[in-house]
Length: 244
Ligand SMILES: [Zn+2]
Image (cartoon, rainbow, N blue to C red; front, side):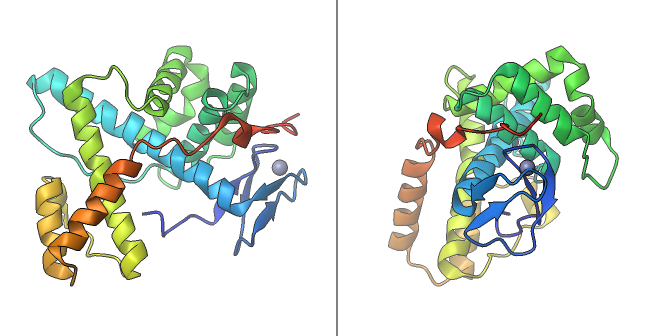
C-alpha cells in the first residue's frame, strides 16, 4: 500500500535511483543536484504506480481471462508492482502527459533497468529487464499506460469495469487508512481471490465504527476522484535534463 513507501526514489533529473532516509519538503539528487518537491514527486510516483498496476498489470490479467474464458468471472488481487516498474511507468508518463521525447524516455527507462532493485528473479522481472530490447513489448507498455492516462477510453467495457472496481477497492482502503490512521485488516489469500466492492465494504463495516452514511459518502468521494486529472504537462518540465 501507499503507506509502505520504498526508501528508494528516482531522480527526475538524471534517472538515478537514490535512497532517501526521511524526505523533507524537497529532495536533492546527490548525483546531479536536481531538486524535486517531495509532495509533487509522490503525486507523480503514485499516479505512475496506478498506471502500471491498474492500467497494465490488471488489464493484462483481465484480458487473458476474457480471452481464455470468454467472460470475466474471477477477481484478482495482484501483488504491488516492483519499484523499477513504478519508476519506468513514471518515465513513460513524462512522455505522455509531459513533453519528454520518445528517445529521452527510453534512455531514462534503460538507465532505470540498469539499476535493477528487484530482489527476486521471476518471469515478471525478466519481462521488465528485456523491455528496452523488445520494441513491441515496450510499445505495448507505453500504449497501455497512455490508455490509462486517457481514463481507459475505448477499452472493452467488461475489462474497464473490472479495473474500475479494483481501483475503487484500493482507493477506499487507502482513504480509510488515511481517515482512521489504522489500516483495515489485510485480506487473506482466500479472500483476495474473490474480493468485490460489496464484500469488501461489508467486511470493513464490521471492523470499523463508521456509519453506513459515512461509508456511502466516502465511496462517492472516491468515485468522483477516480478519474480526476491531477497531473499537467508542466509538472514534467525539466525532466531528464541531466540524463546525459
Ligand atoms: Zn539526479
